[in-house]
Amino acid sequence: MGAGLAMAPGDIAFKSNFATFDEKTGVVTSRRADRHFEEEGPILCAALDKMKLPSYPEYEVTVSKASRQYRRSQTHCKRCQRIIQRDSKILVAHPLNQNVPPKAKNIANIVLLRGCGIRIEVPAFEKNHGLRPCMVAPTKIIAGLGLSLGIDILEAPGATGDYRTLLTSKATAIANALSAPVRACPNVFVPGEDEHKPGVSDGYDFGFLHVKAIDDVGHDKATVFKVKGLEAVDKAIGQLARLLWEAESAGQFQFFLCVTEDHSTPG
Image (tube, rainbow, N blue to C red):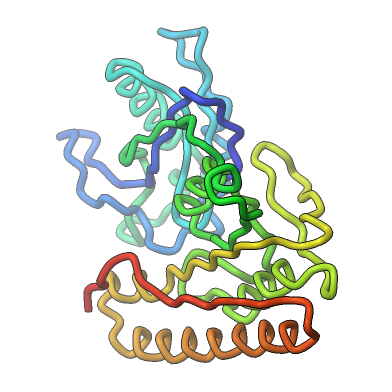
């Protein structure tokens, strides 16, 4: 859902990535065809989207590009095998792969399906806690979890799921959403729709801001960028605190700010 696919309870999706395999041996030689796939990823996703499976004509595979993550709906091992085979046939014949110079880079000739998840039915966050919730979460897995709980996903221009994200935009979006109507509330993301819709005009009671960048640089073993990333996050937290303090000083709000982590990072 976080990647833009409208899912009903019971639907399943895969976190997937383009990979490279040896067509002669069938062995995957690189689990990521390219770490940075911003330009070619959407093109290849479009080639696979709405794919039909001749063996299972009643099913359709939908694909969405989201930063470095992909979602597709389908179930059952044999059907998954057919998806992978069909994906590979389409990718091998795609002009982007046909025109790759020898040894230039790993070609994307297969899609690895992993991280299978299901749209579950759970009580809404607001029902359980009595608070209207919102979040800024460009990382699509996190956004999908939020949507499952009925949490509005705020629009934050320039915010991404990697370490080129605009942290100031994230802080501003959360602060504006929590201090509306004093500040204009951002629009919110709706799965399956191209356009965003207006957020709650009189504001939210709870905001969650997720930062993925530090995890990314840790996995990339980019120590220098990790230090710079932590410094940038520290600065963004200060910006958020100031925006909330300014709204609170107007006498209409009282905020509590919690900074925490969900796991340690390598590097």
